[in-house]
Structure formats: structure tokens, C-alpha cells
Amino acid sequence: MAATEKARQYYDKMFPGCRSEFGETDPEFIERFDNFAFDEVVSEVRLDSRTAMMSTLAMLLGCQGVDEFRDMVPAALNFGVTPVEVKEIVYQAVAYLGMGRVYPFLRAVNEILTERGIRLPLEPQATTTEEDRLQAGEQAQVDIFGERMRGFARSGPEESRHINRWLSDNCFGDYYTRKGLDYRQREMITFCFLAAQGGCEPQLISHAAANMRLGSDKGFLIRIISQNIPFIGYPRSLNALRCVNEAAGQA
Image 1: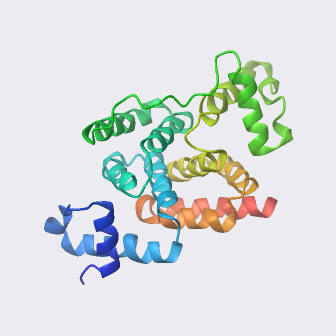
Image 2 (image 1 turned 60 degrees about the horizontal axis):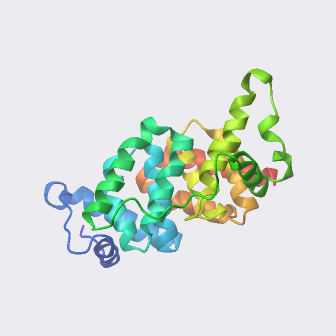
């Protein structure tokens, strides 16, 4: 079984002038994988290439696929994802995965960008200060989830209220308010972080609903899941699909 013409063309666009080492060591496997991921899936899903690549980077962060991530960042750049967008995906992942898991991905991005002659640090993207990050973060929550989030930072039992405040000023005030990605893109990558890491079904349902509220409907989220089945596998993809269906049923 040979690689299809479409799979070869897609691979060449991602990695111009490169040959997969697995083509030498595991030719039968890699032909099947490439034909599935880069022909069958791409043909069925029909996402624009930038969105597809951004979702894959976020999914690889979520599933801790750092070696594949290292390979896919240059592909994403070749498909038009900007260095700022790549960095913003990695930065926002800290809120959902923790620095312990994101650290090697940040190192990888810095190495790749430096190798490509891109000077670091990139241009600043922050829009908040220590003084206004709480207010701006809560407004971002309201913009994304609705008026029910008004006052969220001051809600909940006293002993854990600080966590709600941190969700407002840190998760949303420090990350969602940054330039480089809009709310809709940020909710899409959050959906990917949660879907790929697994075990976050309540949060995944909530963020699936937030995606839909921002205009990324059920069909779009199914395409995002489908695009990344080759990278995160069927069990987590099917769990994510169940969460999307549940969120759609609550709308």
C-alpha cells in the first residue's frame, strides 16, 4: 500500500524537503498513518489549515505529545500560524495543564523559533495590569459564559473563594485578555486542552457550551475532534464527542 497523492502533497506542504525517518524504519505503518491523517481525515473534516494546525498544537499539549508537538510547530508555521499564535497557545495551556506539563513545550517552541531566525522575546501581547486584571478577567468570563459569571470572583465558600478569584484574575485576566488570539480561538484551544488530557468532562462540557455560545457550533467542534483523532486516539475523542452532545442538549 503506497501513500496517496493527496497525503504526499499535504506532507510536503507541512515539511517541505523533508523525509520521514519512519518511512525507512516503519514504511507499512507510516503509509497507513499518513493516508489516514493527511488524506482521509483532512478530506472529510475540511477545516481551514490554520485552525486545524492550531487545534492540533493544543491537542498535543493536552495529551503531552511533546515530540510530535516539536515536529508539528514548523508545520503549523508553514501553514500560516504565526509565532505569536503558537506562543499564545502554549501560554494559555498553563492555566489548564499547569507549568509542570507545559514547561517542555515552551522550551521546544523557543528552540524552534530561534532556529528559524525569529528573535525572542516576541512583541508584548498583554492588555492588563496588576490593578485591572481581576476586573478585566471577570468581564472576559461574562463575555464568554454570560451574565451568570458576574461576581464569580467573590462567590463560593470562604475557604475556597480565593480559587474563584484566581480563575478570574489569573486564568481569564492574565491569559484570555491577551492579544494574539480572540475569544473564539481561545475557547477552541481550551476545548482541545481539556479533550486531549481526559478526566475533565465537567469542564469540557462547560467549555463546549462556551464555544457554541461564541459561534463555534456543534458541527465545528465535531470537526475539531475528528481532525485530531490521529493524534489523541479514539477513547478521548469519543469522550469529547459525548461532552459536545451533552452541551448541545443543554443549549
